[in-house]
Length: 486
Ligand code: BG6
Image 1 (cartoon, rainbow, N blue to C red):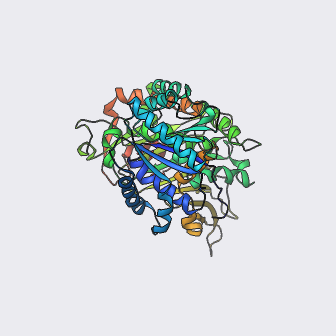
Image 2: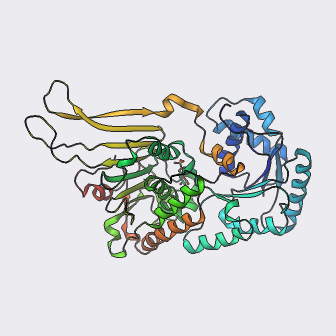
Image 3: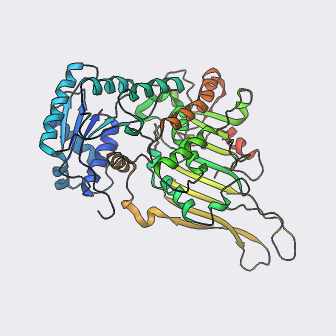
């Protein structure tokens, strides 16, 4: 496909190949890369899992999964092409000798396809295996120090607090250096999240006003209508703060607030994002109640894998400030939750009202602020709200929208997040992966909230499924005049 990069040859070693992520996201993404003709003859996948499947059985399951999860018509000929690249290897993650067999498969395959020793290890397993697998990758020589490159892709959660994240990072960095570790936050791959930086950099009307002088507040919202589904056991230990806020929500905040570097390289942008995350003002324990609202949807405790007396939060709304010259005094409101009215994610920049009054003749204050809304999903696009004279009146202002719907124009060609994740990692581009220092700063800030929440389960309010979340979340933002969740 035009404009898409051909990918470097390598062996992709996919640990956790029979898991939900592999079937739902990674295999469909590979199918799409095949379709885009981005995969060369020097690319192969070694699907690794504990399940006792033959390659044929695995491929049958994979075909069904791809069929189910691609949004387009399934192309059998294309699948036949892709399946030649996929080899299944049964392996118990904790059994040393299983890695010898894997090593042999890798060496043999490399001989055949000539991947030049390039190895991309993808950890799509339960996090409890991350350390043991990387340990064996090193001790069992699953890569060649003198030939080709080695890289590691790690799924979230990256630890469950700062100290476990540090431990995990130490374990990974015994084998891979920072430039070789690709920490996945799939929100960073969403087309409109990436577009945020380009909209700012590419338009003179936004960047000069992107600051405390002109912006009243920012809203960062990611809502889901579904409940926890089959992931109750994991989610119950995690809650919305660990599952969404520490990573996706703070990453969107960082990209919204970041200083744009003169030279927009991956390293420069990540340096600037680190500064934003390090400038998050920690919430004070005695005022957390006024800054954060937590909720749990009614019926959550009946979900599979969830404790009957669980106080895990399925909803969080938080008011955040940054200690950063551009943003002093500007609140960033974060809102995320499951079991809400709709599935949608957006970032809203609400400008201050113009000073003075608007109109000829009778003096009237302007009521409607300008707003820039970046719609991330399901609709992708940008809406600019501004004021105009109501036709036929002398001085009545009405708010109107300039509405750019990106997916209406580009439709299905927008690459899916996991397609980009894989292609960026294979091509060694770290721009949209999180640096250890970002993870560290996010946990440092979030730890205060999760500790407090663990000690104050009574603050978690029940809300009905399909609603907008607890009423207190509305109060959190409406406390200030002119503010309302969009
Ligand atoms: C994941 C969370 O990281 O993101 C899930 O673990 C959540 O709980 C999901 O549902 C949301 O992602 P998306 O792309 O569907 O908004």
